[in-house]
Length: 109
Length: 115
Image 1 (spheres, rainbow over the protein chains, first blue to last red):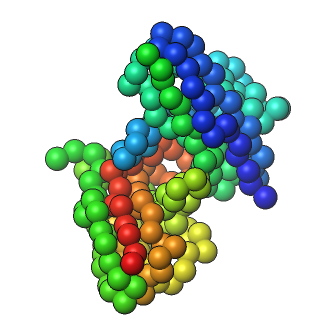
Image 2 (image 1 turned 180 degrees about the vertical axis):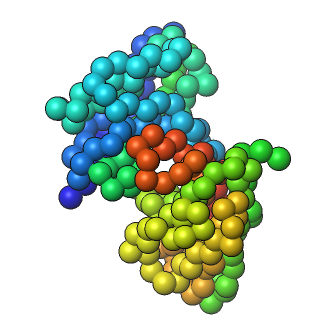
């Protein structure tokens, strides 16, 4: 089967750092995506990792370990607008994208 | 208008109705997708079209019928739906399908309620 696990909800404070974890078991691996989805809106692309290591893009960074089937999204200097759901998604060997259920992040002032 | 657009944004229909969802992308992409997003469930891929040809049908019931007349437009025809089909239906597009780096651009979705 194909499975992607991420926490359902997380809470963090404005200005702080939060790490959202994602573990996956899929039929092959061709890359991992993180998407951000605000309530009532479309998902928007944040990052793509296909090689092990950390990819940094401004306040957001994404890490991948293929041997462990593990990724995390790191958000620094949290802002209220970062309150959203964060979707982890894996591209399997058939280039089919499999989404996790998403992590709803709440930012407290 | 740019990006991916979807109409209508909200739809309420009875189980005997026939309706269609429309998606249009202005990004020059070759692949288009339909997803279903239900509460507390992951995004579920329904259909994939690449260069107007259907390449994926993810075991979707026949009461959902996709149509892709050209690479910019995608429709989802609905008939005799069930209340459990109530969900957010998202359309997405990407440059191509079948390549590893395949960022998808999503439309705003159609919130469907089946009574």
